[in-house]
Length: 225
Image (cartoon, rainbow, N blue to C red; front, side, top):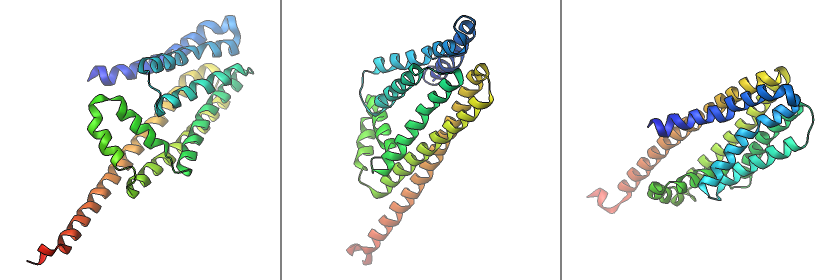
């Protein structure tokens, strides 16, 4: 349990918070704010590429990761001041949030694709994957996937807006500390919202199926005997 849950969290903290901060602090004197900030992006970008190479899968999750990496690199290659680099980096989050909203708008909710990709990655989830895909055309299920996609799209855009406010009000060094913490907190809130929404939707679904079963039982020919 510790290996499955605690270790990945520690790795995320080291790669996305501690390592960038250490790289920035140890290079800012030689490279300046812009150069040090670009150097501090190396650990998380390298870790994302390593994780992608490890899984060796091209699915919705991998495509989303590669999109984030590609956009991040493009933002940094554009140059500019340190704060401008930080602002452009958060544009990646805003773009991904927009992708979520567009996918819901065109009837291909990204949450469904990501959930299916996650189940496909685990060989022990074949039965769950089959049950998940069998509900793809269910109207209630489609509504849940669409609503969750909208929730995440709006949430990511709000997180990007919060990050922009922090960039404009904090030094580069302080943002490297508080920005990721705020981002992880926001992601935690989105995950909690997702969990509560799904649990509520499942309860409504069970109640609806119980009503349908009861109605079918009353309408059956044997019900009057």
